[in-house]
Image (cartoon, rainbow over all chains, first blue to last red; front, side, top):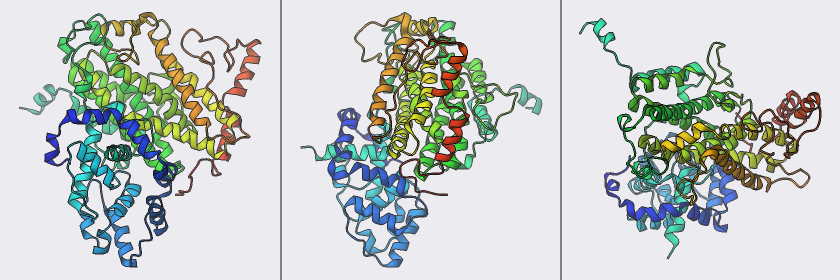
Length: 187
Length: 386
């Protein structure tokens, strides 16, 4: 599933990051801004059949305001959440324009309903950039950009040595996304 | 080629083993539809495995990549035995746990348990691959045996089926409290075993361990967090939880094997299985007490983890603690001796001892009480209902 360009990744450049994944994960995940208890509760509180209130809970944890979507748009998103299969991202393209404008929000829904998709986050993108994985900056739900983003995190999971993986029951995508976010924020 | 010749020239191999694996899944009660799009991949981490033998009498020589490079038959036998035992535990845990999926307290717990079962099967698959591809007919036969035994804890079990090789893996896991105990205490032993094999002189075995250890970290996190959520919820009394801790800790300690083990010593001499902290340790190995040393590391880790689990405990509840490593042991120098939970010699008759055990280990009345608690909101976030 990894894009061909990722195969030429500089593994030596990844090594210092891999050694720090547990520490970086804790720096981000356990920070006040991330509300780790709230995050972990959501893992248990979002389940099928998905309801609007569940999306509200995700929005609240992510710090988003109300969605203000038309009913049919909300239905469209719900259908996408049921139909999409990791690592596919092309279904994002089928959404109405007003939902496509908010990749962070949609990635949150995907993350908490599937656990395999990663939350889109600018600091995480910068973290990937520091490792030599260039993902364009965007707010729009571009399936190719988001697809490259989740593939990059999946690749890091594959390449990381076992000592990068701490004993935690959060999804491994969260482990790496959170570590990358902390890494991306560092000067 | 005639049909007879085809049969005559048929050589069992890993592909044939895969067919048997699928039959095993059905036989033990695991519905393959549960796998979804999960794929059983063979994963090696050759970089972390290293190129040079790290300890033992062959230290400094290149690691062995193939069976024929292994210098003695006794070493080949030791490797086959290690791989077989590891594989046996992986399949056993699935046999013990699959029936719990229907009674998961939340959807996330169900998904986590299913993921653990998929990954345990992958670990068994990996061990079978090593046996079939590196150890010829002997290895293939051992790989088949992995699928012929059936855990004594599996509700789907015929009387004539052989038991799994290690005690803990024949224990029934009747409910989710046991599941979290198992993933916390017994999978933690698994982590120790994998780490000890990760420096092995047989490179395909060492390289198998990295990906398995990655996956194991989630299993341990699931167990530890499950116990934290139960303690924090405060519905199941800590005194009752303590009984289950007593049961699983003693069986977990036994898994490290006998004291002054000569087979552990030989494995170390061969470079096949190292110490838990082989790469980090700066002192020479005490070869006569290798199992004791690993067990001591494990025991220390259990105590540290229990401090974290207790943090969410309600004020009116007693602290849950790790019992003495002398209590209720089935293996090692304390086997057959009577010590209480705090490691003090038990004074009293055999009858007194049996009576004492009923107060500190779970019995029928405890199981019945637990079933009542399970009707309540016994664990944090138990909102999902079928």
